[in-house]
Length: 198
Image (cartoon, rainbow, N blue to C red; front, side):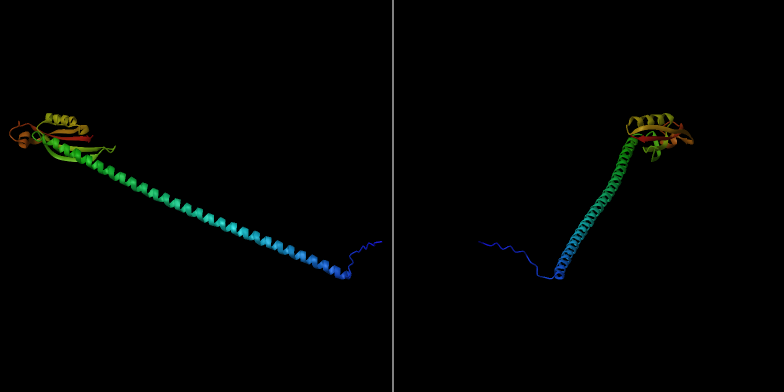
């Protein structure tokens, strides 16, 4: 007959040694847990520092881009200011050229009138709306000659408006004293005509 031997683990260590072994296991588990928590805490802190560093780095990049955009915007404003200044100068030069051209045309026109008109002054100015004006002062054989001269100025297309500002007879001077003996000896007509350039 076969015999079955059942054996049971028998611990031959004394009980206090068993308690010491259990206590040692508890301490080891506690130490491992502490080390694990410490490692996890360090990992989380490293992740936080890395994410904070990335955030600061991104913020610096964004601030750099904003600074570049502001610098570009300031350059655009400066360029717009320079362009406006150039446009203003060009407009001023165009006005001067137009005024000079009109004055030349006026002088050419006046060359044909010297037999009956004596010019004593020619000046330019501007109206309240900024339109260019020319003031013509002089003497004519008579008042009718001033009216004819004014009509010719209107018909010349050099001016948008021609106004006889004043016509007076000279006290002592006569037409023959200014224009020679070929004209009748009538009182000299002094005039001022204001013309606005077209």
